[in-house]
Image 1 (spheres, rainbow, N blue to C red):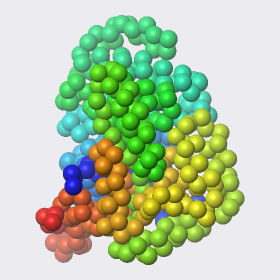
Image 2: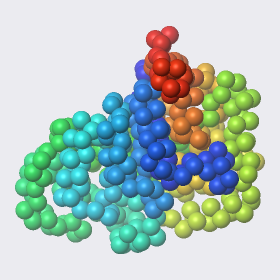
Image 3: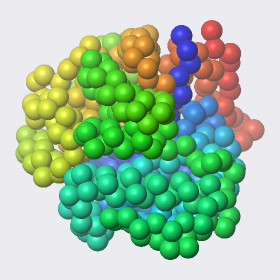
Image 4: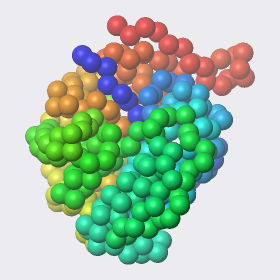
Length: 375
């Protein structure tokens, strides 16, 4: 087995033990996010996705706050092409990359909800925001390479633009991106380094990989591939499925109907594909072996989880690897405890160091990391 990259997710809109309720909610305080970030860093995850959106804390501020308290984990931060300009964004990326010592990754996000974009002062059609992203990235890349740029496009116009302080990664921090429409795939083929799909059944993922790969080839490029999934892993299959049922046990039919009505107002093709996997019904949520769509009943974006014992979850991940997936962006509720659980139970089966957290009397009860070689 080739060892994949494993990223974790930082819940900057809050965390919970039960979807659809705030009874056991955890607000996204700086202290809690720092606990997750430093734990993920010490556990040996390769990266951490810091999300974006109206309900999330600003990802750039959060990433800057984590820079001095993390050492090795890479931070995947949103590059919002629809609500910022390429010149300012180039300066921000270079500065943050320097603060992180070259650990910055960028997640290109044109946006998927016209209402959210409108609230931020951006008004684009679906394909228009990808046209804008194309122009944005064309200028942004030239700035990151040290050029002085004059550019007059349909959406982006700059004159004498320059980034005076290049960051440590050359020519720029790696660009990640996810989108399911034809316009999104074309943008991926032309510009990005890694394409991320949400967790659809393997056959659907294979089709997306083939399409993006073909579009990249037309531009003389190659693209790497990753997948965004939740994980519910326990020592036995029965325990894992019980945990999945418990996660949505407090959802009402009204909760589900309200969430699905909200997502239906978006023009995101990816969101429509997520909704189609479960159809708003909670009685047929295992949409492929060990792939469970329960999270998507009330959560936008990534809505599927791998559910099972460690060996089963690792086997399902291998099936995605066989398709060309190299990076897994994982998460679980609540994110602090599940980051530890996933590392302890699944890392050894993926060829990564097995890591345990143990309380230490020498550190006043704080968690210490003890790693043992993977077998």
